[in-house]
Length: 239
Image 1: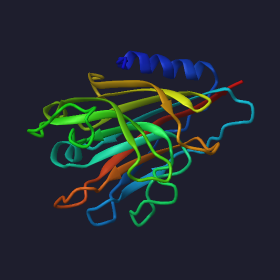
Image 2: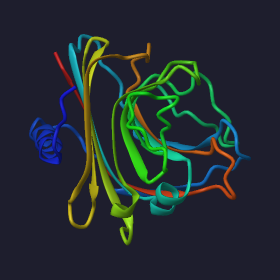
Image 3: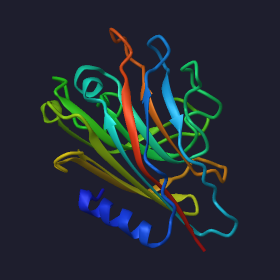
């Protein structure tokens, strides 16, 4: 699997702007799972987009700043971001919703255990934050797959208010390539970069919506929160 630098993702973003894709105004929101620990979480759906008839190639780019340092350094939870989805994974009660996690492609950032996801580096001392491309399943909460996965030391987040995540997904038909970066939003120091190719798109519908989520899967002392500032949501079809 080829690794891409943050420069590559920024070039892709500039290219999308040049091609005339629409970008959303920056919006912010906080997510806290409203449920007891288990297979639950909190999520928010992004802007509406839909594949038009006759489109051959599609691209979606997301850029978001996130304040989740406490969650990433102190918990076993993770945040997730998806492009190309049909809907969001969680309902307002925190339970998984219809067709969850809705068949998109994106990233997971946080604690991703190597025992369950062998593509991630071993982190037996729990000193690392894992960052991965994730293929989200359709109507199967156990069916998602962690693909390319890297890690960085939790100490890199000490004193950091916001991190910046960029996600780029390109699909030809239902076969997709994805790349993503995570960096310090103030210094632009790269923390992790992942990519994968030939990813099947599980979403059977034409909706191409992003979502943002925080999990509550582990037995934590309290429900961890994350705040998101959505900088860019772009969708571009090509005929």
